[in-house]
Length: 72
Image (cartoon, rainbow, N blue to C red; front, top):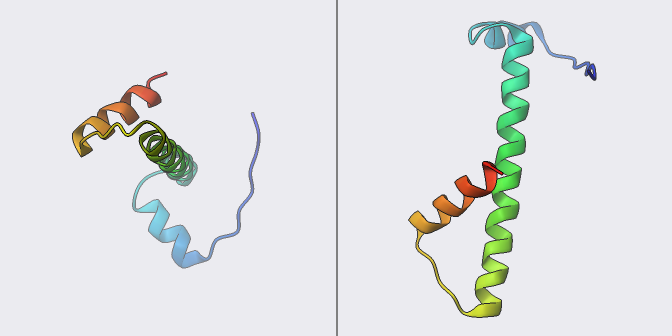
């Protein structure tokens, strides 16, 4: 397991503690950030494919594609 060290102020520390154990909150935040970045890449790729093929999808279909991609 990799160890990551961060510096936070007392104010930030108290704010994080309100949401639970600091390490768990940070792990969840990192996971959410990585999921968000993956979604951005997926949407970007989808737009590129749509431009290339002329195929259009709805927002609901886009969300389904992202969920399917994340489950892989």
